Length: 246
Length: 200
Image (cartoon, rainbow over all chains, first blue to last red; front, side, top):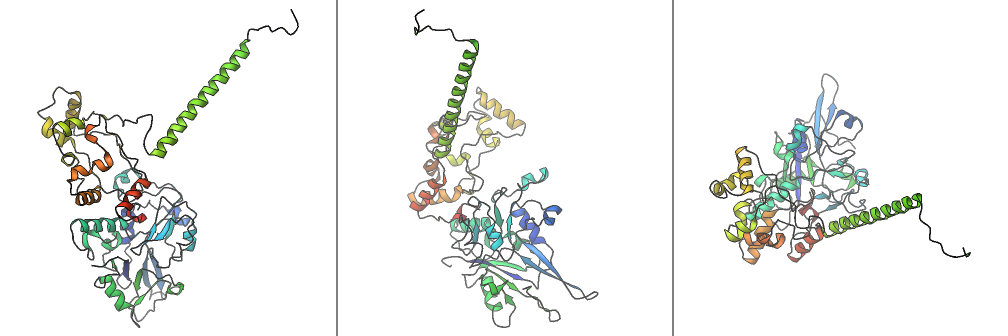
């Protein structure tokens, strides 16, 4: 048992097949409005987690590379100091929290974010009549004019912490639906969620192994010093070198 | 006629019309100001002050007094999710029918409830205690904390926020349920005041 939690994720790119299961799970868990083609064309689509696809090599030796990108919950988040109303801040559990009722929609945070994982609601969210009853009651429906982003499914974390307190049990990895929707949906187990403050958790062991010299671990845009809570493990493929894109 | 002598004149039709219009505008303005003030004061206090201060009209008059005071039923008998989940929950008509299959034949409300039960429909109660969509209040955690702290049963904790519902004619809001109210109580009880505790 640890005093405080530091939630984080490990993403093994070697396992990712680019199936977009996490994207669909996230959209339905977090009441994200349906993105139409014109939203994508306007670069205004909302996807808390997205799969970026890169092609490598020349035909016929083409390889598709996938990388899931969500909010990195940075320790030194560039989005936080720019908010004039303190609507985004770092909480005790290492998460970057977006407070919807404080947000006034200046969009400074989206400009500050190097990962492009913060999204602005340009429209009032709409769902077809048949999907009205599928909204998750544990997640606020964001109205027009405010920012939103991945919350590491904070509603699930709150619920499982509360339930483990109620039953006087120690919260362990993957207990009681602690995992975010994307992690639960991942078919190839390439997303792993857990507590970095707990030395026995799967993520802290993986991080310790992976971040050693010559190992696969890296953080997205490490050179910016954002100190992210998401660790990526690069592709095991000698023939094609994975570049970080910067 | 002596010059300067005051001779009262009858007002003309146009003058009367103008006066009437002025009166109507002033009266309308006054009513408007009163309505706006009522709205502002209500929203500041977090509950209605003049209109509907005694709670909204319900589709069926449910006498809490009869059930709780006279028959001695617990809050948790009907609001049975309150110790388990976020929402306290209102029972389905099936639970009412366990008793009202036999009792209350002479009452109008019971006849209405029975016909709804037979049609498989639910009673559309008017919600009394409502927090905004971006606030996630969990009954379970609060009931658990207060019953452990004060060593009392779950049913006695309810009155902390909901007041003495048992002696209310119509259920009405007792506490403002504004954020300041929540935060004060959280500070007094060393509960977390992190935004993500309630807002997500």
